[in-house]
Length: 203
Image (cartoon, rainbow, N blue to C red):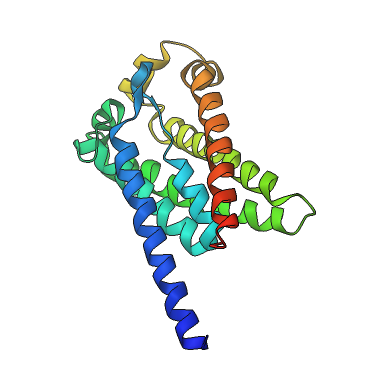
């Protein structure tokens, strides 16, 4: 196989995988599981983790950015609906864009960094995929909630949700079991998909 043909095949694989992962993001955006306080259980970090594993930093950034863009558009009822997003975007569309888009872009890049560091260890690749999936969900929760409180914690809407509780108490009560479920599912599914792609010789 010539180098040109190999590069063409690699490019086709990259574009196909990116398209598939972004399509999955759109579907997952429609099936979020609503929770109290306008939050929801989401598994959109799984395609981000898979992109970070298969396509490194560019893949993580592109799919992470797509996740963030879809999340931002949900504030306007596009690709799903976010009650909290709809309330906060009226306060500041710019800050909402930062909270929704920038946080997820960072998740994609840092998830790729996590996987890159794991590859340099002697960990079994199956465990590396699983850990990467876990961190994608962990980082998503960390950045999303941190920016939510920093950018909008002073607003009347957020103060009503916090109901006089401390920031830490609010975060624990709001995230709680949601984050645990997301991290476990993301770890297991990312591990399984990563292993399948590895066995198929695609990564």
